Amino acid sequence: MRILLLEDDFMLSEILCEFLQENGYEVLHCESASEALNLAYEKNFDLWLLDVKVPLGEDLKESNTPGFTLLKSLRKANKTTPCIFITSLSSSNDIENGYNSGCDDFLKKPFELIELKCRIETLLKRSFSHKQEEYQDLGDGFRFYFISKILCHNDDIISLTQKESLLLSLLLKNANTYISQNEIFDELWEFNSEPSEMSLRAYIKNLRKILGKDKIINQYNKGYCYVLKL
Image 1 (cartoon, helix red, strand yellow):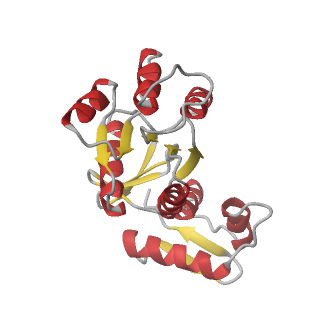
Image 2 (cartoon, helix red, strand yellow):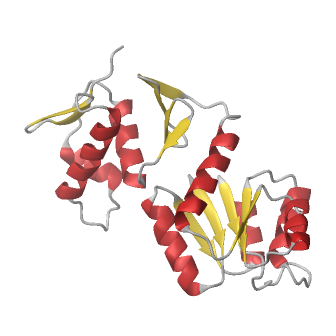
């Protein structure tokens, strides 16, 4: 799941990017409203996470609340991506203006990271429920959606890291077949990154904890296999 983050506070943006990436999201960060506007047009996002009091940039008219102006422009262009405002603005007028500009949620600074995580998951689940997407029924209430790389249990989204999602997708696309460790390394790690056998074992351990230890088996010199009953 890809998130556009508009935040001009360097320390906060670093914290948010690291936190979101640890929770399995791909994050594109920018610092001005005009840069966010261009990215929103150029790329597909599952969520916009926007600060309000940010530098305007070059392509938007002067405004005291560039974040609101940005979202109004995107909504007028029929861009329907879910949006959460994160801002120090807290008056009832500010909140009303935020929702009137087209946001789906409004989170006042300072906030706890766990609260942000819960709001994101709730909003994405609501948005995701309306999408038609191919998925694999794993039994016991589990479903995996291949395009968005989301694992659900009944109506709940299960939090996975980005590499865990990629690993599960790879195993399911090759269900009941062993995938070698080198094939997994090629899929999960960038060409300029050093693969980690210890990390891979940790990802496998977490997936087994969620789905059941008998779902993913391994064999020496053959690799890992997801056992899927057909």
